[in-house]
Length: 249
Image 1 (cartoon, rainbow, N blue to C red):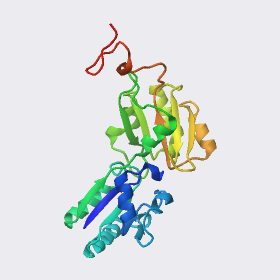
Image 2: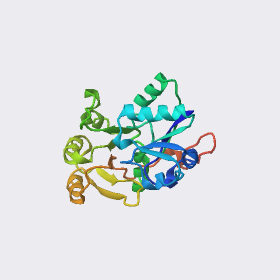
Image 3: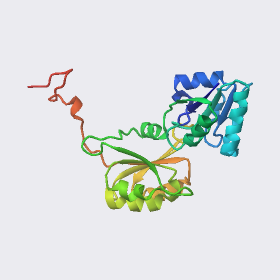
Image 4: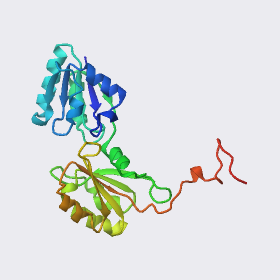
C-alpha cells in the first residue's frame, strides 16, 4: 500500500501531469483539499472511489483514514493543490506515515505561480534585471520567521510571488514601493487557470485600489517584477556564440 501525494496543479485539469491523471482515474480512496481543489479535477475520480474532504479534518483524522485504508491494502491519493512542495503541509503527514511504516511517493504538480506567470505572459527571470524568483507569503495566522520579512526580500530586487497575501495588498505595496519604486509593474492573479480566473494589472502605486475595487481578498497570487523594458537575453543574440552555434564575426 502506498500513499501518493499528488499535485493537483493550479486548477485546470489539462495542467495535471500524466502520472497524476492516471493515479486519479485509477483511485479507490482519495483525500483531497476540498476548499481549494477544482471540482473538475475531483470529477476525474471513479464514481465508486471513496472521497474524503480534508478541509473538515485535522491531521490525526487524515492519518486515521490513511491507516484504515492501509489495513485494507489499498493505495491512497492524497491530493494537494499546486505542487505538494509548496504550502501543502505534507511534511507533517510524511512524518506520521514514516512513524507508522507506511510507504509514500510524491508526484509533483504545476504551481500557481507558474500558472499566473503564463496567464500574464511574463518571463519571471529578466536578463540583467531579475535572475531570481522569491516564492513567499506574508504574516497572517501563521507567523513568518523574522529573517524572511518582505522588507528583506524586497532589498534583493528579485521577482516576488506572494502567496496568501491578497488581504493586505495595500500594506505590502507600500513596503515594496520603497525598494522597487511606485511605478514597478505588478499583478494580482485570482484563481489562476480556473474558468473564473481574473487578472488585475497595475503598479505598486495603484494596485491596492484596483484589487479592493475587484473585491479580491483571497485565492490570489501577487506578482512583482521590475520593468523588463527592452531587456534581451544574450542566448539568442546573433553575436553570441556557444557550443551549438557560431556567432557573427
